[in-house]
Every structure is written in structure tokens, then in C-alpha cells.
Image (cartoon, rainbow, N blue to C red):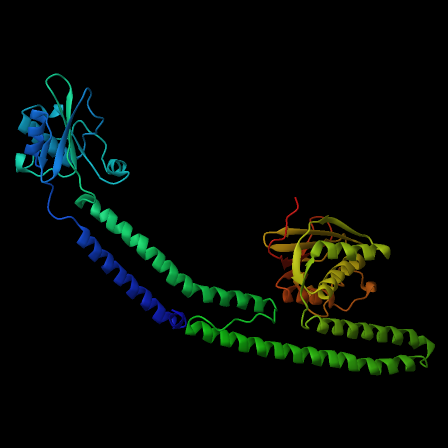
Length: 453
């Protein structure tokens, strides 16, 4: 079985089809062997004789039972086979067809209910059905009969029924096929789909930036080939990202040395130029610091299970101590799997933007489905809707709508989105109805996180 699970999907599919065909043939052979042969030994003539004598009739070890009831049985009279049987008995007993009742019997649990499902609505105007051609010699198969006697009572004859009889054999054969083939198909399909599902989950984790996502090369050959390609793609992407990150960090770090020399030389610059030179140097230094932070944001994450609401509340409390207007309006406990330092940097960037450009921040943390959602709102002048996505481009700032004196180099939102996407989430902006912006952060929540109402 293990060797079959590693075979190509085509081979496994052919194996499933062949196994299903073999199972169907075996069930059919077993059913044919169990099928009772011949017809029941009683005829309509025997039924008529039992009604006349009011005594049971025995033949070949079976008994045609007779009982007397005061009232007519509650049977419907709208089946053509029943109508022909009624006409046959009426002819043999020389009684009106209205004094005869006939009902088909299905000798399985719930058989009478199933028979009733197939009955058409009763119609009094239906044409009379002719009796069977063989008359009293016609065989009785799964039929119960009732005839009104001269004293007004009813003689009811129950023909013995075999189980399974010819009328129920098809239902039993279909049931046996379902009971055998459905588990067989489920087993094969489960073994075939399980590695595909595992591969999809691994690919999703890899797409979220989890470098530890590795798929064990198991399952069909096609899945193992795709797993190898995925692993190689992960290795190449990780190598390219590491090389780019190291290059950016190295360039940014090396730029600080000439900036330090420029800062010393600015001390000897003419007074009318000194302040402007120092401002440019400080701005360049801030840009380098931002580039270094951006590069560090793409390094390997050290993930832990942590409560996002607690982290946001802690950072809000720190900003409150500096005099900033920060409030946590909603804090529903929801745990995420992430790097504490990276997530603190993400939240800090959003809070700093709201405080600098919007005068304050309102935070909300809650769970939506399988995700943790953080909302950071401000009351600033806002930004045009067409420019919201542009702000996530590195070194882009919304200076046309926000105060340029607040500084900033345009890496905060790009860094926040990079961290969120590395954790399998995302960051986006939206305009509030009246004034200000709202930053949305969505991260995958840990399974089993409790909801607080």
C-alpha cells in the first residue's frame, strides 16, 4: 500500500477504477448466488380456495394464511397490478370488484412506505383493469388479498413472501454496492488528496514568509516533484532576499562614515549656510536609519505566540507617558504567531504616523473569523483615496495633505506592510467618513484563541 501511495496520480486513479470494477463484479456474483430461484408456489386459484374454505393452504413447506376481520383493511386501490389482481379474484369468486381489496407487499423494513411513494393519486374514473390472462393459474407474488364475505366481514389472505424476493433484490444489490464502494472510494481519495492538501498548506506558509515551511517529499510522484521545485524556489528566494538585504544594510551603514565627516566639517561652514547643511545631514542620517530598519524587517523572524491586544496596549501606554494622545478603545484578546520585535516595530510605525500627522491615535483590536484585526484611526486632514496605496511605496510621503514639518522619509508604511506580509497578513489604509485615516492590520490568528464577547 505504501508503494501504491508513492505511485503517479495516473496509476492510482487507474487502480481505483480497476478496484471498483472488481468490487462491483464480486458483489454481482454474490448477489446472483444468493438470488432465490423459481416463483412462489401459490396461485390466485389457491387464494380463491382459501377464501372459500376459510382455511389455510399449505404447499412446499409454505402456508397461505387466512384471517377474518370485521372491517375492510385500509388499502389503496390505484395500482394497475393490484387492479388486475383484484379483477382476477373477483372473476374467480364471482363477486363484484368493489368487494375485493388487493395490496402489493414489499418484504423489507419500511417496504410499505416505499410502495406508497410510487403510487399515483387515486382516481375513480380510471378504466377497469382486465384480469390476468392465466386467470387462477397466475402466480401470486408479494400480494395480500381481502374479500367481503356474505355476512359483511372480510377474509384476508396473506401470501408468504420471500426475503429478499425478486421485487427487493435490486434495492439490496444497490445498497450493497453503496456500502462497499463508497468506503473504498473514500479511502483511495483520502490517500490521494492528503499529500496534495499538505503541499498546498506548505506552499501557503511559504507564501506568508515562513522559511521553516518544508514539505516532506511523500505521496504521488507528481507531488514529490512539485515539492522539490517548491523547496528549490524557497532556497533561491531566500538567498536573493538575504543578499539584497545585506547589500542594502552595507550601503546604508557605509554612508554614515562620510556623513559623520560632513557633520564635523559643517562646524566650519559660514553661519548663513551651517544650519541648512546640518539639517540636510540629519535628514540623510534619518533616511539611512530608515533604510537599515527596512532591511532588518526582512531578516529571519523569530516567531512566538503572543497576544496582539496586550502588545498594542503596552505600546499605547508607553506613548501616553510621552504626552501623546493614544487610546485603546477596544482590546479583544486574540493571539498571533509572530516576532515580538517585528510586530512592535509595525505597531510603532502606525501609531507614530497617527500621532505625528493626525494629532492622536485610537486603537481597536478584535478577532474576525480566523484573523486578528488591528485598527489605528486618527483625526488628521486625510489623504485622497487615489493616493492611499501610493503611500506604501518606499520613500513616498503624503506631503500634499500632511504637514511637511513633521519629517519622515516615507519608509514607515512600507516597513509595516513588509512585516505584516512576512507574518501572512497585510496592511492597508482607508478614509474615515468625516475626517482622518484608518490603518488596517490583518494577521492570522492562532487556532483555539478564545473569543471575548
